[in-house]
Image 1 (cartoon, rainbow, N blue to C red):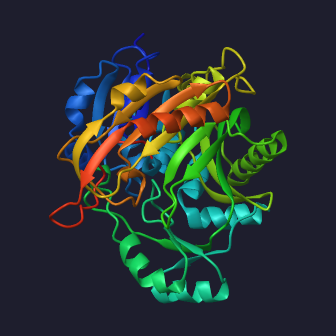
Image 2 (cartoon, rainbow, N blue to C red):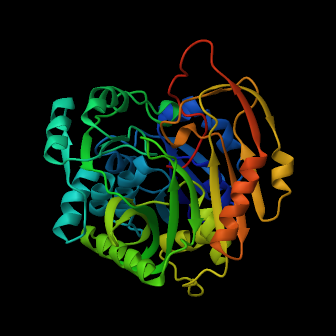
Length: 432
C-alpha cells in the first residue's frame, strides 16, 4: 500500500528538510494560503522538494476552513496533520479531528491562539498572569496605566513573532506606540485580506524570561526543556538569544515545567508540542503566552544538539499515533545557544568576518541574511534581525560565550538610508 501522507499546514523550508530525513519521497502534503503561496513563490520551492507530494492552496485562516477542506478531500486519509506556523494551529487541530488522527485539540488550540482568552482560562486555573485588559484605543491604555503605575506592555492578542509589541515606560508614549503597533504589516507571510486586530495592555512583569517546550502524548508530557531567553534592550521585546537548557537551579526548572503542565491541562491539550513563555518575578513565574506548535528562532535545533535527540521525528511519531521507540532524555548532556544579529537601520555596504566566525571553537553555524545593497529596518520584531550564530559546548556559559565571540567577529557596515525609513515587510522566512 502507498504511504499515508502527513499534512503540514504552513510552508516552512526547514520543516520540509527535517521531514525529508525520515519521510519517503512524495509523502508530505503542504497546505498554505493562496496569497502566501503567490507572494513567497512557494510553488517552485515545493517542486524542488522530493518529499512533497502536493502543495494545496486553501484559505485556511477563515472560519470553517478545516471542515470545508475535509468535505472537499474526504478520501485524503492522512497519517498525521500538524501546524508549522502560529496562524495554522486552529485549522490543523480541527482538520486532525475530522480525519481522526492525534491532535492537541481544536478547543485547546483556539484558546492558545488568543492571548486574551488564554489569560482568562489560565487565571481561573490559578496560574499567575499579569494584570491585563483588552483595549480599543489610546484612551483605554491611558486609563490602565493610571490604575497600574509603572511600565506597561501594549501588544496584539492575535499576532506572532513579537510583532506590534511595545513596552511603554510612560503614558507619554501611548499615542505614538498605538499608531505603530496597530499598523504593523507581516507582508509576504499573511494573506492580502488581512484579519481583525485586537489589542491588550498589561502590567510589565520585571524579571528573567524563559520558555518551556513540552512534547505531550494524550495530555502526558514525554519530553520537556526549559530555554533561557535574552532580549534586546529597549521598548520592543525582541529576542537576542536563547540557551538550551537554561542555566537555572533545578527547583526553578521543575517549577516552570510543572506550571506549563498545569496550563496545558487547564486548556485541555491532547497530543502535540507546546511552547510556553514565562517571566520569573520575585521567584514566581508569570505567564507571557503559550503556543501549540514548534518554537521558532532555532530552538528545536538547540534542543536536538543539547539533548542528542531528534525532536521533529519524535513529534511526528506521536502525531501519527505511533509509540516512541525509546524514552526521550530527561536531562541534556551538553548545551547549545543561538544569538541573533541586528545592525541598526540603513543600507548594507559590506559584510565580512563570516568565515573567521565559522572557524571559531564551538561554532556550528553562522549566517547573515543581508548582502551589500540590502536595506535593514529598525528593530521592531523578530523579522528585522539580520543574522545568527549557533554554538555547542559542555555547559551554558561556554555556549553563550562562543556565540558572543562569533558575532563580534562578523562585521556589517551600514550607512543611513537616503530615502527615509525602510518599509515594514519581513526580510526572511522564519517559523513563528
